[in-house]
Image: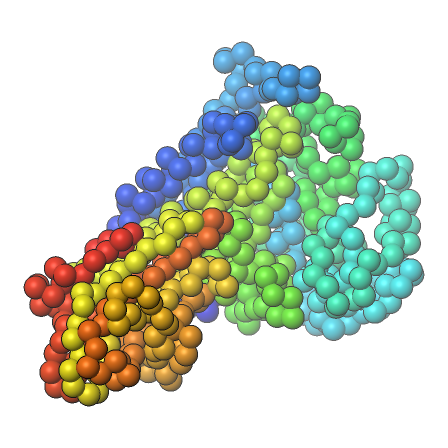
Amino acid sequence: TPGAGARGATTLRRGSARRAGLLAGQLRRLVTDAERFLGPSPTHPWYAGAVLLAGRGGTVALHEPIGHAVRYERYDEVADAGVELPPERQVPMAEDTVFDLASVSKLFTSLLAVRRLERGELELGAPVASYLPRFAGSGKAGVTVVQLLTHTSGFPSWIPLYEEPTHEARLARIWAQELVAGPGTAYLYSDLNLITLQLLLEEVTGTPLDELLREEITGPLGMTRTRYNPPASWRPKIAATEDSRPPWAGLDRGMVHGEVHDENAFAMGGVAGHAGVFSCAWDLAVLGRTLLNGGVYGGRRILREESVELMFRDFTPEFPGDAHGLGFELYQHWYMGAMATPRSAGHTGFTGTSLVLDPSTDSFLVVLGNSVHPVRSWRSGSAPRVAAADRMARAVPVRPRTGRTAWFSQMASDTTAVLALPPLKLSGGGARLRCGLWWDTEPGADPLALEVSAGGETWEPLAFTTRRRGGEPSEHPEGTAGGWSGRVWHELEADLDRWRGSRVRLRWRYTTDRLYVGRGVYVDAVRVTEGRRVRFDERRPGDAARIEADGWVRSSD
C-alpha cells in the first residue's frame, strides 16, 4: 500500500542506483532508449527533447535531460517539416526545464477534490447538481462526484469551449451539454469531467483553482516550479510546445511557449481543471513520493493515508481495461509498460508528459517530453513512455529464490521463449514436478504455459498449483498462468502420475504479443521426484546442463 515501509519520513535525495536498489545498467539503457525517439519515430521525432527522472524509495537515481526544450521556429505544413531556429537560439533541455503538463494537471484537481472529501465538503455519491444546480440541465441530474473523478459521467471527450467569447457563454455551453452515455454506464475519458470538477471546487471553497493549488499542494510540498500561468521570467526555462494554427489547431497562436497549449484551458485564462499546470520533473517526483508515502512529505501532510488509498483504488471494475481511481489511471500497460500492476497509478498529458507510481516496488518514473513541438501530428502512441517504463521495471531486481541465478524469460515482445527439461523416464508412482515460479505478464495477452509431451512431438497442457508463502494454493487447471502474481515467488507443483511408465519431456512456454510486456517470468530450483527418488534436480550440475533454453537466460536479477 502507499506509505508501506516509508511512513512519511521519506524525502527525495540524489543517489546511486545501488542506493536506490536499482540496476545501474538498466537505467543507462533507459536513457539510450529514450534518445532513439529524438530521431525518426518512425517518420518524425517523437519529441524534440525530454527530461527523464526515475527513483525508488527516497533516492532519485536518474535525472537526465536529452534533446532540446526549444528547437523549432515554426512548422512548415507544405513540407511537413519543422523550421529549425539557428543553433545559437535553440535551447537544450535541462534538469529543471518546466513543461506544460497538459492532462497530468488532472491529478492536482483530483487531489484537491479528495481533500474536500476529507473535510466533509464533498461526498462521492452526491449529485454534482446538489452543488451546481445549473448542471442538472440536459439530463445530467444523475451525475455524481465520483463519476467526474472516474470518467464515468457519460460526457463526450471534449467540446470546443474556446469558440465561446465569454466565461458566461462557456458555462452555459457546459450546462447545456448532453451526455453521450448514461451516468455510470460507460468509461469515457473526458476533459469536461475535470472542468466541471474545477467549477465545483471553486463553488464549494470560494477560492480560484490556482490559489487552491498553491495553498494546499505546491506551497506545503515546496514545489516551487509548479503553478498555473508561469510568469514571463520563467519563459527561458520552459519547453516550447506547438506552432498552433488551423487547421490542425483550434486557435491561431503561432509557436506556443510559456502559455498553456490546450485551447480550452487557454480560453479559460490558463487555469482549468483538466489542463494548465506547468511543472518540472523534480517537482512531479515530489508529488509522487508524497503519495507513495501515504500523503505526507517532509513532515507536511496534504492527504490522509486512507484518502491516498482512494486515489489508488479501482472504482471502475465493471469496465475491464479502464481501471481508474479518484483521478489516477491504474494498471495501464499502454504507457506504464512493465511498471503496470493493479496498484500502479499514473497519468499522461497530450504534450508528451507522464507520471507512473508503482507502490509494489516503491518506485516512480517521470517522463516529460515536448512531443507537440513543432506540431501535434508528429506524435502518436506512447512508445517512449513504454520503453522507459519497461527499463525502469527491469531495473528493479528480482532475486533468485535459491542460489545465485534463476531462469528468466526476458522481456521481449512478439516472441516465444521455451525452457525445456531433458527426457525423463517415469517408472514408479507419485511423480511430481516442483519449482519456484515468479511471473508478471500482460494480463489476457502473454500467457505462460506448462506443457508435457510423452513422445516429444506433440505437447499438451499440464495442470499445476501455485502457492505463495503463507497463502492458499491456486489451481491452474489449463496449465497456464498470467497477469499479476504479486511479484513474489510461488511454489509450483504438478502431478505427473498420469505418465507413469512413460518417457516424458516438460517445458515452460512464454508467449508475448507485439504490443506490451510485463516484468516477465522466472523459474528456479526445478525438481522432479518419484516418492523419495529424485529424477531431476536442477541443483545438480549434470542435470542443470541438460536444460534447453530458447529465449530464457540465467539471471541473478
